[in-house]
Image (cartoon, rainbow, N blue to C red; front, side, top):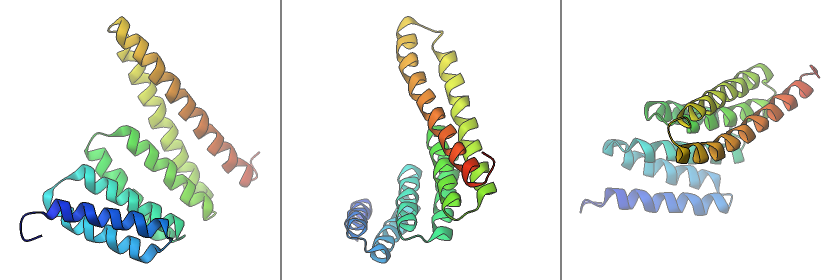
Amino acid sequence: QALGLTEEVAKEYIKLGLIYTAAKQFKAATQAYGQSLELYQPTGHQLEIAGLYESLGAVYVQAEEWSQAEVAYLKRIELNQQLGRLEEVAKGYNVLGEIYLKQGKLSRAKEMFLQNLTLTQTLVQQEEKNTQYSDLTKQLGAEQTKQRQIEIANQCENLGKLYYVDGEW
């Protein structure tokens, strides 16, 4: 670390976090990810920091530490919004919806699933506009649009589960 290898050390902590997570040693995993986060924060590498919050959130979900998972995913969403990574923001809303659903917080789950759905639909509309510029873009955009439509269908499935659990079926 003293030799300017801070990022390399941070990456090693990430590897440890992965190992501990696989071994279901959640406390050790969160400590390893936390160490990596402490090393990355002064560097300003927001993309890596957002990824660490996702990793932390996933560990907290596996450990069923819902409040910690919520904090991690909210931070992940915030950083991805700052980075303009709207797909990742949408995914974060979906995960938060699942976290709330597991806790029986149905109105919060619905809110997150709807935010995910709205954002995903916006991304589809943007991609459709982009397809108007060239034949190549149209071909690529059609494939991306199909993927987005699949994502929207999955979100509708999540909302369906929520309505079923909530008795609105």
